[in-house]
Image 1 (cartoon, rainbow, N blue to C red):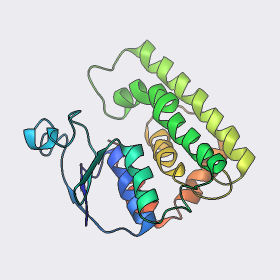
Image 2: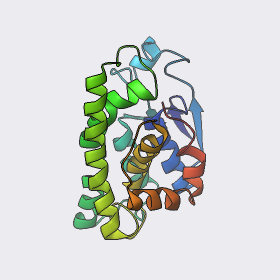
Image 3: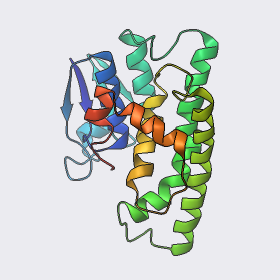
Image 4: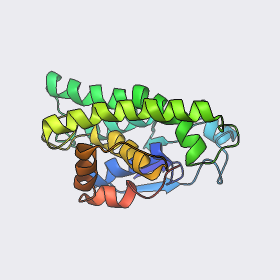
Length: 207
């Protein structure tokens, strides 16, 4: 059975849990991370020297980095409907996954730490405002894309890209600040809520 190391509230762990739900994969999860077993424990560091969750163990195979893990799960466990084999549709999925992991993540980092986690180290008013503005700029890009497809981020069908992007959309709506109206993103959020995997793992935390 697959083993997933990481606390269930972590956004990156939730990517893996949601992917397992979409693929109907059973798994065993262990709590690691803030509030649980420390990822600086030597036993954990032997699996991931970066001391970050999640870590996947599939038999003797060990993998870290959440987007790499969910790509592996789709490739290894019959997920071609989530991660196409053809180069062009696969590249479109990868494009939006990579965008979420880089541009979008960087934009909301400071605002999320300040407003959702109430981090004392992230209370500079100017930095909060700049992060909120940058976050809104990238969310407008997402809104435009979803208005074009009328469905999901890589196109009409739900794909692996919707998992990290959907979790970022959850953070957008759950972080308290004055947001612009983004009707296509709001409709997308409602569509995702119809998926069992999202109901289980998409809206169950903001860590």
